[in-house]
Length: 247
Image (cartoon, rainbow, N blue to C red; front, top):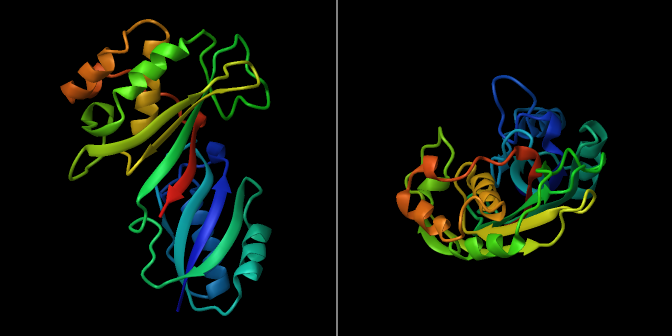
């Protein structure tokens, strides 16, 4: 029984998210169906993170246990031959038995992309939050610094999540200038782990700061409140990308 690490990317527009669900098409479900046909028996795919409906991944990681003797390059080709074109397996590697896509991870990197021009490119609208209003990048960067470090991020957690602790460590938040109709403004955030909707709630809060509705200092007050109703709106899913998983 081999332990295989799969690196894949996907456009999440047409899917209910990573996790297999009772209704709708999921990335996990697509992979499991394809791999089960190859193995001849049910296969469970473990992902590094459960991206939500509409969220994209540039490099999601998954692990599987496989008995079939097909080598990784041939398995990559076989999967890409049956998966839809908006889901691509980039590489498959055999790894040590104890490696696990989720439990071996020590951090993740996400990007959130925003276009603030009056119009958005027809080639980008599925991959950005279109605000159609200017944002002050300086104040957003100032507010971002208050989120770096170890904090209780309960105020930025989406509803319906059950976790042992809402404390997380954000290692960095960086902003790349943009905003034009075909060049997004990009927030890149790295943390040891994330709560449900945490990145999207941070993006929505910092957009309120950038729009001038809140001073940057309010970010610290929101953190201290531990109250989700104090933070900004949940930014829409299509602007969010899982970029990298650290091991």
